[in-house]
Image (cartoon, rainbow, N blue to C red; front, top):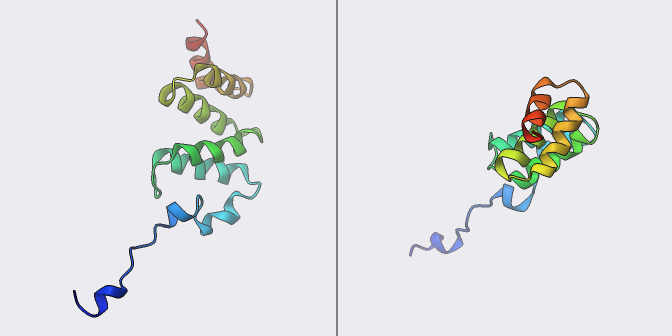
Length: 112
């Protein structure tokens, strides 16, 4: 082992220390569209590690503000990933009530 090797530390994983990257903090404060996009990035693993827990967290923030796409995505995640059809129906119903035809089709299928 060389002299400087003993001073090396393991790399810091910011995703491990911060559930949201510090650059994302301003985006999510009350802005439903930004919350939805950040949640979708976590769910898809785009630019971040795939993380359903944080993805759902930020999509929920947007969905509770009436963001129809967030409501639809929550329905899809609960239905397809977790097979929690009760929650899927809940979120598809909210999106369908706002006129989302895809959500209505999914809802029709789940409630046959």
